[in-house]
Amino acid sequence: MMRQPVALITGGRQGIGQAIVKQLAKVGFAVAFTARNSNDDCAELIAYCESVGSRACYIPNDLADISGHCALLDQVISWGGGLDCLVNNAGISSLARGDLLELTTESFDQVMTVNVRGTLFLSQAVAKLMLETSAECYRSIITISSVSALMASPERADYCMSKAALAMFNKTLALRLAGDNIGVFELRPGIIKTSMTAGVANRYEQHIQEGLVPAKRWGIPEDIASAVVPFAQGYMAFASGSAIELDGGLSINRL
Ligand code: NAP
Image 1 (cartoon, rainbow, N blue to C red):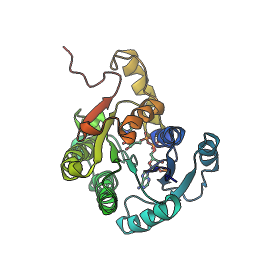
Image 2 (cartoon, rainbow, N blue to C red):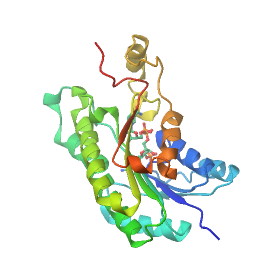
Image 3 (cartoon, protein in one colour):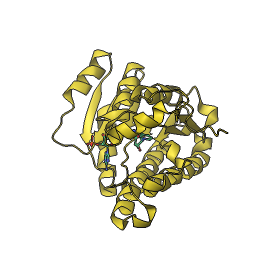
């Protein structure tokens, strides 16, 4: 009997990651997901995945702690029997918004440690694992970066730098894995309504009203989750190394 494809989503407990967990469960993936919170058993989210005919497993895991990546992957493999898709979604914003000239080493280090270092080394471990198994079936590594990979926000320069680093990581990883039937993609959300943007929601609301986003609305987590599916399922396999903006036109240069 064919094994059910397995996806691992980092930061799947809430926000964009949670929508990705639900969407991948709906299209037939068994979904393992991580987050930092160990007090939550994510029973509701797991029950949702079961209600759409799939299965799910929550594994509390700090992406920043690279020594824990091996145990995480062992757990995923023993639960799911393999790993076909990694979605690098977990990420944090700057500790505080403010003048670039006042950026702290603490904020820079935390943002880089989670967003870049954690994502890079988890992906490296997953890539090695995927290479150990057959190249006949398609696998994928999908990174949720941001329009901030290219659009500058001087009030959170460290966050933008971290996403720009992921953009180059995506290309280099895609080159490394292109011959092994592993698709590597970067998705760049714009302004999405989640807890990450809750603190500046009023400001963004006003900018959106004033026309910042051509689509004239906030993005919702489902806008990102639905776009993950064709990359995870292999419909976009030949586009490996590509980045796609999911931002309602926000990043289109205008006169
Ligand atoms: P969110 O609502 O704050 O959710 C982030 C998730 O990542 C949470 O589940 C959180 O865990 C998890 N996480 C954070 N640090 C972690 C760590 N060290 N180890 C494991 N998990 C960790 O944020 P979001 O808006 O959904 O963002 C998801 C991704 O989209 C991020 O990479 C973000 O940069 C990117 N993005 C967001 C927007 C936006 O407008 N919202 C725009 C562009 C890009 P807990 O649940 O335990 O806290």
